Length: 204
Image (cartoon, rainbow, N blue to C red; front, side):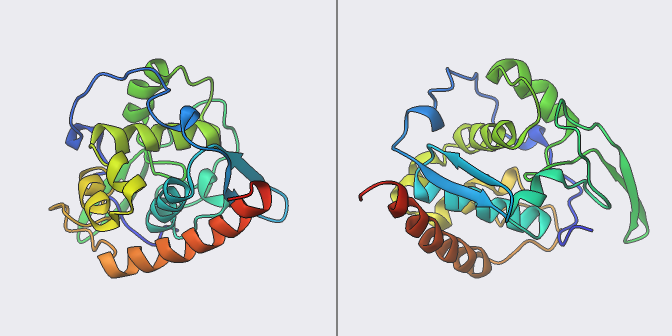
């Protein structure tokens, strides 16, 4: 069960900007950092430590964990195992006397319509963890928050993506978002941890 109820994780709240090449961020930026791991899973990408920590913070705020298991989460209950495509599982739950339904899934709680939009534009072959990360970064880019993330302006970046993720501030979704302080504290802890792992791979 998710720690944050999302009624409106909805790409229609996102500014509509055409997608450039996916040199747009991740694959041309800096060296390597570890963004998620468990006892059996380690995901090494070339996202900078700040971007990796920001992604981990979104995963935690949306699913209650930033670990590998977050990539399997369904919106209200349960998990999915098949990463070949978005699970397209519609779940409903009675919240505040309203029957709320959503297809949100994965570490960043993407809707099926988000997948329909981004899968062809980003050339995604599946809904695997790397693909989910790319989708999240595209939404960060669309909301002009990449520079804020990379410059360490966490509060501004968090506010800019609040239109995408209901667990973040600066939206009117009224879904009890995490406070900026909670998010920043988690981000800072992730950044320290990631930089430690990063330094084991590359001499900073």
